[in-house]
Length: 205
Length: 234
Image (cartoon, rainbow over all chains, first blue to last red; front, side):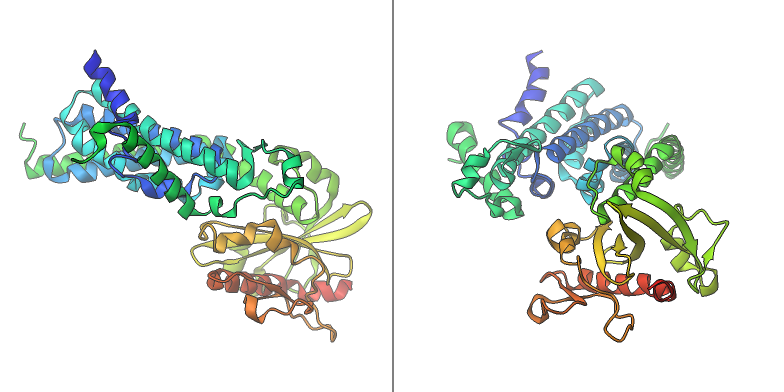
C-alpha cells in the first residue's frame, strides 16, 4: 500500500514534474495570471493524464512498438479534444481565457513522459494513481503561482477584491510585472529555491 | 498473435483511428446545441457592450430584447430586404460569396436611454486567425458610440490587447466620414505616428503591427459595404 500511495505523493513534492523535472513550464507560465483558469487547466491536465495513463496501460500489451508514440498521441489528442468540447459547452468563459492552451495540453511533455515512462510498463490501477499524482503535482504549482500572480498583479483572489480600497487610496498600486510571463518564471524559480532549500535529497552533492 | 507484424500494426492503426473518430463525432454532436447557444449569447453580449451595456452572458438574452429594437438585413446597395434571418447572418459566409450582389449585411437598431444607435458587425483577419467585433454608430451614422473586438488566436499580451477596454475606449467619438463626407474608416496608427487630435485614427500597439493592420483593414472592408446605407440615412 505504501508503494501505491507513494505513486500519488511523490510527484506532488520530491518528484514534482514542474519544480524537480522542470517539465510543462510553458503552460505554467501562460495560464497562471488568474486563479480560475489555473485551476481549470490543472483539472483538465489531471483528467487527461490520468485517463490516458489508464487507457495506454490497458492497451500496453497490444500496442505495436513501432507505432507506440502515435498511439499515445492519438489517445492524448482524443482526450484533450473531449475536454475542450466540454469546456466550450459548460464553462465557455474559462475556455475562452485558456484559448490555445487547452489544445496545447497535447504537447505537454509531462503527459507523454508519464505514458512512456510509466503506463507502458504498469497495470491500470498504479497507472491511474501515477496520473493523478502527476496531475496534482502540476496543478499545485500552477495554483501557487496563480495565487501570488493574481494577488499582487490584480489585487484579487478568484476574481474577488481582497486588497482593500483604502490601500489603493493610500498610494498602493497593482504590480503590472506580475501579470507578465517573466514574473511567473521568477515565482516558479522561487518555489524551486524554497523546495530545494528544505529537502536535502533534492540537492546535488 | 504477433504484435509486431506489419499486418497487425496496420489493422491496429486503422481500428484505433475509426474508434477515435466515432467517439469524437458523438461528443461533438451531443454538445453542439449547448456550444451554439453559448456563442449566440456571447454575440448578444458583445452587441450590448458596444452600446455601453455591460452584462453577463446569461443576462444578455433578456437585455438584448430590451435594448435592441429591430434587426434587419440590407443588400449591397444599402436597401432593406426581407426574408433573411438577419441575426444569424454570418459575416464570414457573406464575405466569402464571390458575387458581391448576393451579399447581405445585418443592421442592429438599438436604443439606450432614448439615444438611437445602430450596431454593425465587422470581421477580418488578424495575424493568426479571424478577428471580429461590433461597431455602434450614433444617429448621424458617422460618430462611433462604442466598439467591441474579439479574436480567435492572437498572441496574448500583444495582438490580443485589441480586446482590452482601454484600446476600445479610444474609438469612442471617432468618425468614419471626413469633412467632405467621404468614407475614410478609422486607421490604427503606430504609437509614434499617432495624432490624438485626428478624428479618424486610434493608437495601436508596438509589437502587434500585423494584428493592428488586420484590425484597420477589417474596419474598412466591413464598413465599406454599408457606405450607401450610411449616406442615405445621414
